[in-house]
Length: 119
Image 1 (cartoon, rainbow, N blue to C red):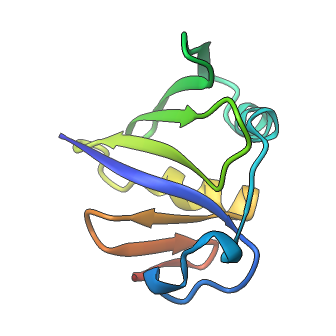
Image 2: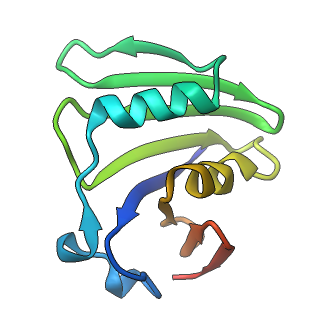
């Protein structure tokens, strides 16, 4: 079992899941996202996907993480973690470092630089 997170760059304050729509988000450039993640996580291993885009994997202190970034600028890219990832603390760190929010649909939570809260 894995846990998925939708990673987004807000244009305005996001207070709940109802606030998440295209006007509230900024498109993210794939190469910029990939470069920022690589700078933050030097051990992150990337491979280019056959249909375009990028797949990255990282073995963190609390479990493994997989990153999927499309080939075109988009509002959302994804991170998946193992159910064994005890804290998923890297998601909050990525949000703080890159100015993002993450939506955890399984738990119904929004994660940002200040922590997590119900969506």
